[in-house]
Length: 284
Picture 1 (spheres, rainbow, N blue to C red):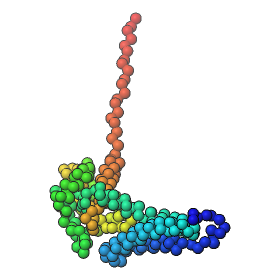
Picture 2 (picture 1 turned 180 degrees about the horizontal axis):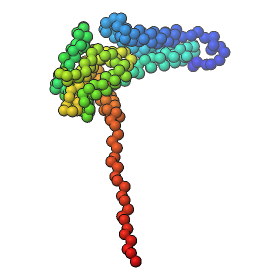
Picture 3 (picture 1 turned 30 degrees about the vertical axis):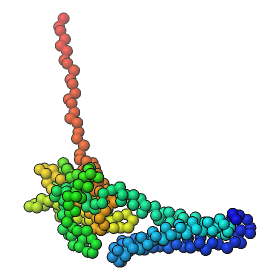
Picture 4 (picture 1 turned 90 degrees about the vertical axis):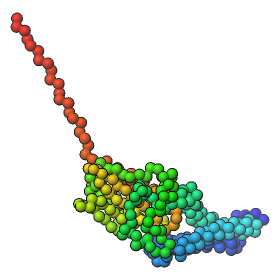
């Protein structure tokens, strides 16, 4: 019997499946929040955090399936619970939307996690190397030629930043941008004589889960000018889903813009005003 919105309908019992669907969706939200807190604050290792996260996604999927079964039951028996089903569908869809997008990115982008402007001689991880030695962490050593070739094909715009400013100025601009982005600076060494190479090592976090991604920046002189090389590498997972390339590209753009905006405007030389030719009056 099709459901009817009449006074007798209000006395019908609420579908237990609808209640279960809603409760599963709410539980999934709680589990996702807990998994994010575990990763961001380091309460547990990465594997338990990910197990909690994927378990939450499983609850969201189960909530949708139970909701479909509850909908069929309500349609046949005329019981109540449509509001709970719709709430469960909304919550579960929002939870699954971002992982679905990441799955599409995983199929689309190359499975690499180490991006650099100089694949031949990438900036090294020195202070950060000890933080990448835990279980499941990626090596501090550059990923190699395969990664370099995949990067070249997917992100050909990522190249060394060449600046028409001294190394010290390039270092100051880069460090200011890192501070503005609120990355955690682990080590900083300005390009002072006799060592003219500047280095910055920092840690960034992904927006939602807060996975740590390590950055090493090298500033070297190029005559009177300077060159800036950047390396960004995920501490965990073989694929970064494009996050490191996006970070490096954005930083390159910001460095170039900051240096260009700081250059004094060149004034055009003023042309001397032309004096009118003198006229000589002839005597009468």
